[in-house]
Image (tube, rainbow, N blue to C red; front, side, top):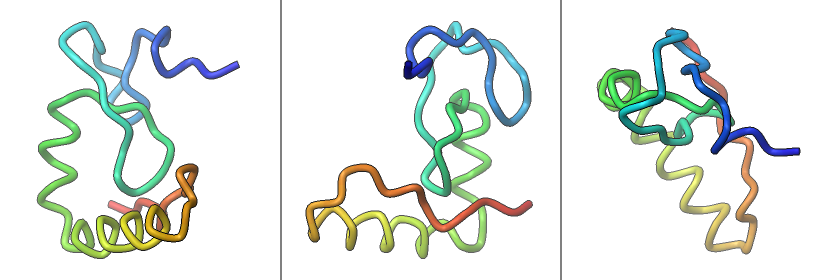
Length: 70
């Protein structure tokens, strides 16, 4: 069962998801909006976006991402 909409805490920082949640561009983590803002500053964020887009074009809507490293 997918817990994306029911989990209460961010997979990255363990903070509350009360004020919003989004899937990471790098992997399947459910992250808070603060972590999303930080993620956008990651040097490989554009690579992650490009890889995600390429998979969507191929019809893969369940791409696991390129992986996240700090």
